Image (cartoon, rainbow, N blue to C red; front, side, top):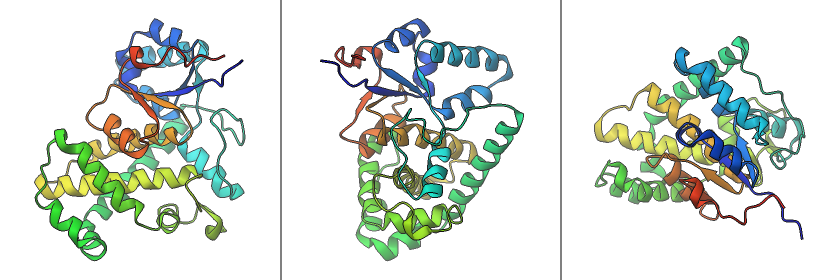
Length: 275
């Protein structure tokens, strides 16, 4: 009996830190998902490394991995058709993955907008929590800011975010993206729902870190936003391969406790075969 191919998202830390031949071999056992964000990170790294990393991306894609369209494109599809985006690789409304100069400029501008928006929202986090969850605010004041206790913090952030109206939250985050906002992001079947949820958690985490010791900076915000794009794909994929223990792994486990998060190739079950 044929089994359904399992899809495993690969983030940048795993992509760079794991032997390329071993990744190509894994691509023969399951579907490796290479996010658009990964290609963007390869194309915007140090000039000396760009061609090597892009070549590595192309080689892994040629080995049978799936080069995945961007989260933004998925959400724009949902906004256009007032319907959740389907499975990864379904080719519905598929957008060509490009990283030419114009595409990079557009992406750069989008990240800058997200960082600017998040920075502005962070400033009002105290009032937000004070109005909606004063007990959580009181607890936050006693928390440790070290990464060692981050998993527990993230679970608390998700508890708070999940108590909010995610449909309304998404409408505000993506204001203007659709002419029928009342039909946009109406359940957790939507990619936009999961991105908005993760965005809310990162907003709370950065607000907390700012409260504890000053703003983490635009560069850190951008990197954490990129991590959100990797983790969001778990709403469609079966697992995530990451070596980032500071944010990606704990964030993915808190957001999708039912999904698998792997830190090495040895962790991927042998029965995750392509059938």
